[in-house]
Length: 384
Image 1: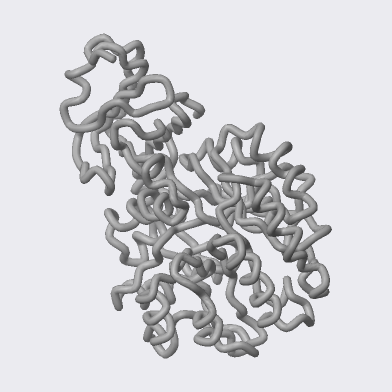
Image 2 (image 1 turned 90 degrees about the vertical axis):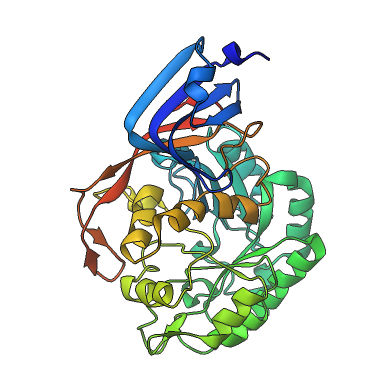
């Protein structure tokens, strides 16, 4: 392969890659679906590239990775079109949180994962007979199909990253969330896969410390920045301090994910945590069908902007939406980076200083600006 064989060179006023330690004006060169070079002098090295795109006022980064989303068609409980509302807005890889279970895994793969241009990985629900855990199922413990879920994982191969379990009362009904988690852990232990865990919030009948004690290194607690203000439900922050149990879990390798969604991001909690040096390991949207009508559109660029508004340094925000989730997914040699030889998944973002104010899930606002998507490249192909 010669230097003149690049199919596409993308120049930007700034390229950033936490993995490759890049931060400055530069370019990325692509051949087929692979990055073949990235850096500050790349444009000059490929004078005969077939196509050159230039974004002098924009930021070029690895494609964003959303560790908690609901990519699916409208037939699925919370499904949002993966290519129109996720891929087109700068996210190139997304993890489905419990959209499929043992009985619906093959249908989900055939009708959602396989046709999508978005790279979709799955945290599969152990609930049988339901397309999505939050539509019900955990209220009857007999619906947790341990053997069926283990079989689906073995059939699913690399597409299944882990097991999804949500202990919120809207999902569990009257069932004991401790039993639900134990049954789900049985699947995770047998398959040697991590959990994507949504913690119990209200009623506050299960202390957060006790929940965290059951999680293992590599397990992910999502919804980590919810407000914890209803009927005694616990957030990670109490009386302005991050709970000792949270620090202990983080120290032993439990990961904390944002999972913004409709009710799980509070500026006051985020600001208190970040001030004390606690930063979520990964940033995610929990994007679902109800977000379609949101103006401005709910997406990864807007969520990462909220973390910046809460005090997280920009470099950390970008790392925790690219490099860190790639590592959590076990894909750091393939995505979340601009290193030569990796998948040519890229996002171009523009900083809009006059964007609409940023709003959390309880109505608290912080002034813009905000990152906004300009272009997405998935597997070397410009898709938006």
